[in-house]
Image 1 (cartoon, rainbow, N blue to C red):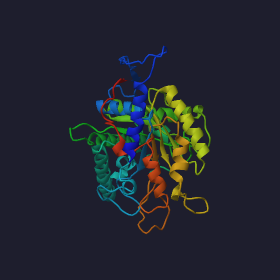
Image 2: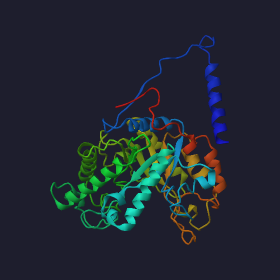
Image 3: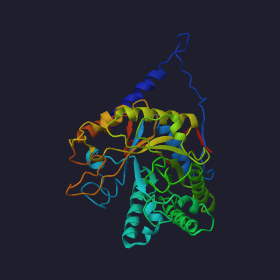
Amino acid sequence: MKNDKVLLAFLLILFTVSCSKSEDGIENTENNNTEEITELYMADKNATLETKALYANLWEIQQKGFMFGHHDDLWYGRKWYNEAGRSDTKEVCGDYPAVFSVDFGPIMDDRCLTENSIRENDIRRRVILEAYGRGEVIIACMHLNNPLTGGDSWDNSRNDVVKEILKEGSDTNKRFKSWLDRLAVFSSHLKGDKGEIIPVIFRPFHEHTQTWSWWGSSCTTQNEFIDLWQFTVNYLRDIKGVNSFIYAISPQMDSPKTTNDFLYRWPGNDYVDFVGMDSYHGLNPNTLTINAHALSKFSKDIKKPCGITETGVEGIRYPNGSPVTDYWTKQLLTPLVGQTISMVVMWRNAYDPAEEGAHFFSVYKGHTSENDFLRFYNDPRTFFSQDLPDMYSMPKQYVVR
């Protein structure tokens, strides 16, 4: 049904264009062969052909609508774990998300040495290959442990972590670089059927506007954060030869913001490819409207694709505990009408077969918002897996440098 609606809209546009008239009232039947070339610029001038093609398609698709994404959607769901081919999203609407979100932190730091993490990282690789095999988009955050204290990402007890990372030859510097080495190896082994390396939208140091992390606003100065970002990009790109990353920054925007807020600790246009926004704004659609508009405008101003890289309401419920049955159309779709963003990615549905908790941020079979999600899915402005063009082939009239 969704594809029929999209086809009808396309035919209507085609009919309107074919019947257009010139100023003197005569039908214009000549083909316009002077289509404008769209030029885009990436941080990695040596990015692979597939990575450049994905980048162009991100820009192209946000002119038409937005992709739906979900963190760890192919790995586990509300009532299942590590069953190949399953997806909470697919079990509701019959299709997979267009964007598959994962966490690269556990493949980088010393958690990767434990038996449990070795097993989980094998799963992580499998589901990335599965998503890419269907033509879906891969995006990865990085909940990286604290390389100075040995604590987790949320260990913000020291304000000298980044200082030590940037101190060439220090133990923390060596440790951090070894973690980047592991990421480079992992990414080099992510290959499609033709041997091509799978592109990834990589968003390190996400939510840097907040205080919760060791790279956040309470533990770093502006210059330290910018230096850390540039150091990471330079090391992966220039030293390790990783040419399959699209570098995304993801400030957290929970209250109304302006375009200037996206410049907070901005690493520079030459070091950022994609402008993300993590948005935990609750049930405040006006806030999402304002911030999505600011994000869209900033994206156009700097000519880089953008998207909402994390969002959702835990338990999809009101403060009194009752479910939000129209969440998808009222809280997401309506605020995003007319915005120019490439994706909206929901946070994860924790595996909880007994449903003892409420740590889930997206729909699953049997949830009370299921029917509303189907309305969201069937809207021609939302893109799921089967709606995607070939995201890894360069669209016509695009050049990526």
